[in-house]
Image 1 (cartoon, one colour):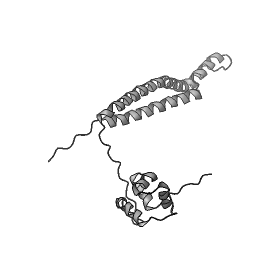
Image 2 (tube, one colour):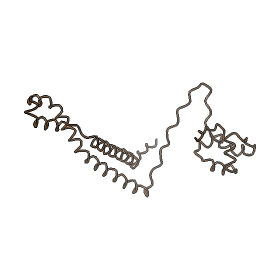
Image 3 (spheres, one colour):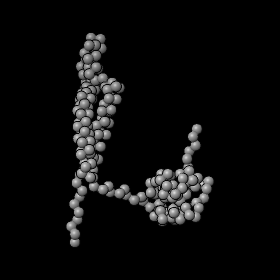
Image 4 (cartoon, helix red, strand yellow):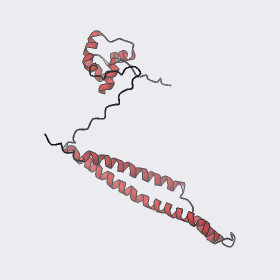
Amino acid sequence: MPRRSVPSATLSAAVRQYFGLQQDELAQLLGVTRGQLAHIEAGRRTLSAPLYDRLLPLARCLPPDPAPGAARPAPAPPPVPPPLPLTERAGLEARLDYCQYHAGRWRRALRPFEGRARAVARWQAALPALLAAHPDPVADAPARQWLLARAAPLSAAAVAEWHRLRLRAEALEAEAAALAACLAPPPPLPPLP
């Protein structure tokens, strides 16, 4: 059974996490091998003075640790992405069209299931009164069977297909909304004073 890794609390690991670097990237920046950096982060080796000096400019950019017992500050909001280059808009616009088209297809494919479910609900609501109109189970057997068949719930396979289509449509609609937001023109800049 593989061992669970424990996150490192070393300065180099904090720098890597803060700047989103892999071990080999930070090792290259510091001029050591990835293996040496891995040993330092695992606590098997210590940071040498020259290596510490190379790491210090990055370490100074780290946010200060909160005081013991103090609440951690809320994480910074994600950065606002830069405007989309015009050369990339065409691909996203094509994907938006695809998502909207196929979401519409899945929504149309859902209509028969929804119509059948509404009809079944109506038959089930009317069934007690309709069965009361045919009180004799033997003489009225064909009519009763016909009524019971109309009020039968959807099959498990039909319900599963209904949910599969619904989820596909919802996923494509969510993607289309995100793409539309990405492709929307940026808000106008406020006027200069």
